[in-house]
Image 1 (cartoon, rainbow, N blue to C red):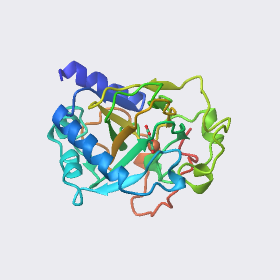
Image 2: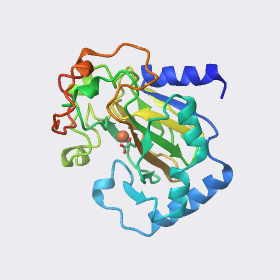
Image 3: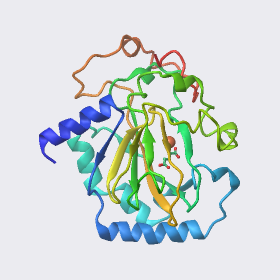
Image 4: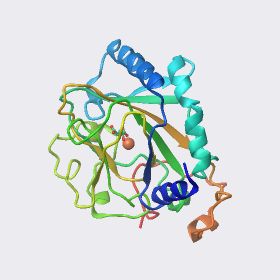
Length: 261
Ligand SMILES: O=C(O)CCC(=O)C(=O)O
Ligand SMILES: [Fe+2]
């Protein structure tokens, strides 16, 4: 990646809440991942509460060599370093989210659980999901959708959504007018198999339904960093973070409160 390219992707991640880096996985690793995730998915029951995500299978690196390989993939670590994200640490778990043929859309949601903590106002990347889709994705087979900028900016939809990944969200009507809406600022994020999607967990995102006759599988790994201001941050630091008390145990919540304005 050229330095200009890296800067453009980092800027997009900061401003919009996501960016894409192509050709991160080799065909060889992709084929291994397809075979092994098919095996894992075919060997288990799929409970009804997986309906909207397709599956929500958490696999630890120590249980599956191919997952261990992917979590520690050098090209990804090098990419994070190049984008100035070298202080992020990967979880040791990957989540297999596989939408079966005919699977419904995933509702609009964000995945941040620390909305009571002033760190929620971080203008820098703070809580990232790194996703690899094992097929090319598009509108037809259930690609990702995002609403750019919603990781740091409140929009109308924030106050209309059911709290994500709760029983209420898992049981929501498939035609709920807000959870599955075509928001005017929503954009589709179709990607190539083996590309890396880097996205901020605070950003509103969703996925289209899978109308194809193939599984649409993705592997997702959460990446976290400390609550310190990043060493390479040259922009403004919000008052709320300068005044943040690191001694407080902020009660976790998935509901964006006063720190999202
Ligand atoms: O299926 C996707 O493309 C996104 C999945 C997701 O965001 C989630 O399960 O939290
Ligand atoms: Fe999500």
